[in-house]
Image 1 (cartoon, rainbow, N blue to C red):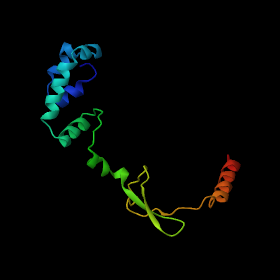
Image 2: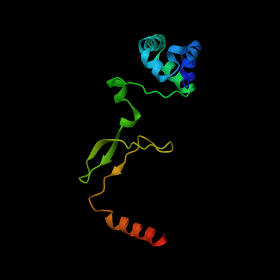
Image 3: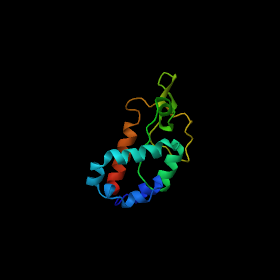
Image 4: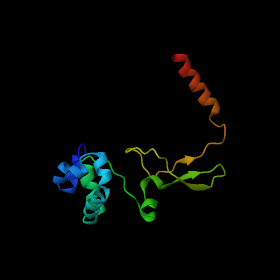
Length: 132
């Protein structure tokens, strides 16, 4: 499989890389059933964790399909506590941007009122524009 040798290495069958049925995209499309069967057997014989490790080690792009349960436990979907204007708290989905130095469980604090920081933001933008 020209340009896809790493896939054959992951599967552990170096012969796939030189097999004319899989030499180029057109050949792979014509022989898709055979290639799909090879890949399906390989996937069936390995755990998800093993597959992810092998694909990652070989620098092969992949994307896992999660169950609803696994998806719901994804770190990006963890809830964060915010304080509403009334003083009550609410749980919101956390920021998609996460830093290694930031405590993911830390409360996000109080949500600002509409316009609360508008003047400060305008002053900051004016200072930046004045320095440009």
